[in-house]
Amino acid sequence: MSDFPDLDALRGGGKPALARALARLERGAGSLEAAGLLDEAEAAPRGEVLGLTGPPGVGKSTLTGGLVKAFRGRGQTVGVVAVDPSSMRSGGALLGDRARIATEPGDTGVFIRSYAARDRLGGLSDLAFGATILMRALFDRVIVETVGVGQSEADVAIVGDTVLLAVQPASGDALQFIKAGVMELPDVVVVTKSDLGAPARRARDDLESALTLTAGVEAHWSVPVALVSSETGDGLDALLGHLSAHSAFLATDGRLARRRRDQSEARLKATLKGRFGTEGAKIAATLLGKFEGGPFARETAAANALKARLVGQ
Image 1 (cartoon, rainbow, N blue to C red):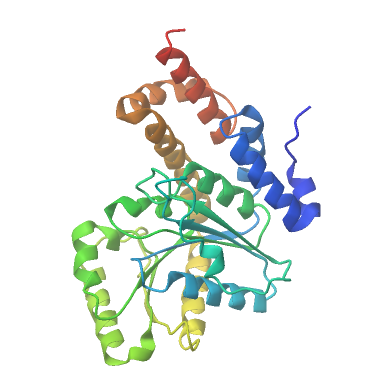
Image 2 (cartoon, rainbow, N blue to C red):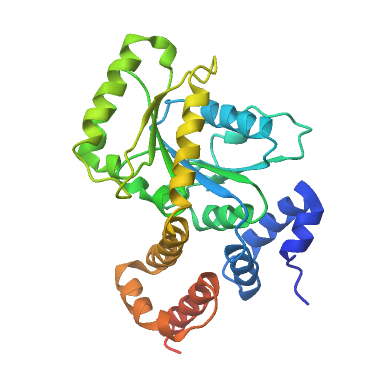
């Protein structure tokens, strides 16, 4: 008998049950039982996922804390997947984002889990992907905070319903992001540390100009740029308004369902490529159509088939 819980058990078990389930998923990664739970969660999304990315030092954790507080103030439950740099010694999360995100310790409506980026250049490990899908089935809001930003940070775009790019003033990030193709990723952009005044306004103007030179993720959506001071809370309501507007935009014409379907296939392919390389991913692409079930079950079946080929069985 499997010791993996189902969603009903997790919904009734609170934060301790979720913590145990995530630990069990980590121990049983790649098993059919783990795939079963994740496919159940994939098929029953409850909340929205906000993917937050930006360069180190921009204040992502402080912004995450502000967003958590705002969502909780609206009566929404919140799960946070915080991706940290990996320790070269242990492979675990190095900085411990949970310690930097301010929340009320006794609040049962908030759950934060840190994950190491490990060897995924895109910023999200397979475990972080799985945790996000599971939390999406349990919480009203899920925030995925990535380790950094760059051309290799596109993983956030295959997990977030809305991608939020954070930029700090006087950093020259706008030009670098254009070069790296990052400006094609976000649905909303936020300039942090707006209390700096003129430098923050110049950064906003630079970003708005940069956005006119790139093709956005969605046609018919103009990416807004917000100014926010996470320390004082100034501008946070305006940012929340932009996020709500994007949610409403996705709710029309089947956009959200289409985005999630495309993301699911992209995650599946990215995971197999990460495990088996480019050539392995090409072979997997010829096998996936033969397997039934949800994306995690198909991934597990394809991975087992590829491993069997590698050992010559």
